[in-house]
Length: 453
Image 1 (tube, one colour):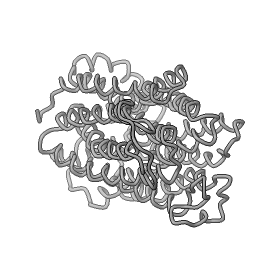
Image 2 (cartoon, helix red, strand yellow; image 1 turned 45 degrees about the vertical axis):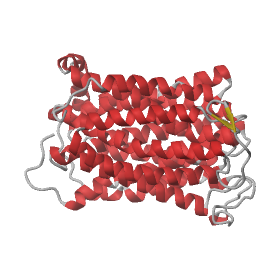
Image 3 (cartoon, helix red, strand yellow; image 1 turned 180 degrees about the horizontal axis):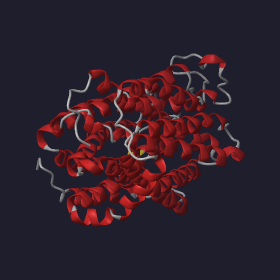
């Protein structure tokens, strides 16, 4: 998409940036730190079975995303406007998140409904993100896209931090005491025994999104309408049929999309199962996992800000490759930890008291912070590298492919984790498959070149 002839108002840029923090609680509260560990440890029969069920639900959502993202992106290129799609899919995310309130503890009859709601919400938030990403090139010149993307990711991490802090302070409770991090019962008279504070993460996410997404709708310019929807759909399908020849003509873009498919699968799965893995390995509850999430989000915010500058300075490919190498080291390190030992059981450790009292727990927190530090730069640099590789006239379609290759996470990596976990009844064996995703992604991205490398 060509840049506008006149400068874009600051409020439009700010409105676009606020979309990331509007969506982030879905990933921070639901996918990673509050609801997913609660589901695996309290709603599902066992943590291992909960990890497998969560992976299969994420895989079902990923399959829909994989099949539909390129078509939707091509339709948006033909239809012009992005905001109607963001609205429709945003409402879909809000409905799915709100329904998670029904996940009562120890009620297996509600598991199918809860997992369906989670899958619907995941599809909605990912598709809304596709169309918001496609707006980015009209807001900044190419030499500043890295900083704009990094600012969006940093704002997203900050939004996740604030939402997580509010959940821990006023709603999520310790299963042992029934109190929040502030030592009080959950707000609004929520029942701690029924874990209503943890379940409230779903409705909270829906309301948060509704408030923070408003500046995007009010201030960000939308391209003028193009073809009618039916004609745009036909044009989109025609564009998809012509896609493979175009990718063959752009081997660097094709290689990057393949690399992104693999390493983004591993990253999102690592976040999706990180809280579940900690709950099963160390017995952490919502408070321990939530504080860990706050610390991780702080490093993620700093990393996203630094990553945007590194992107503009040294190129997106180098940022991506460096982040993948760090993730490989951290992932192997996490797998080496046990409840009472480190280095794959070779070094026993003494029991500890207090928050993160044992050596393995401290090591888990440290490695998690390292993951948070590089996750933001990896995601932001991937977004800007796509912008630099993709043709301007097919930007939304390429972001649809970006979603196909990067958001297919729920289909490939989480399903692999779920299958391995179910086959071995071991959370560690399930998470171990992610090492292969990061290693292969690093090998592929090493061969990608853009105009900065």
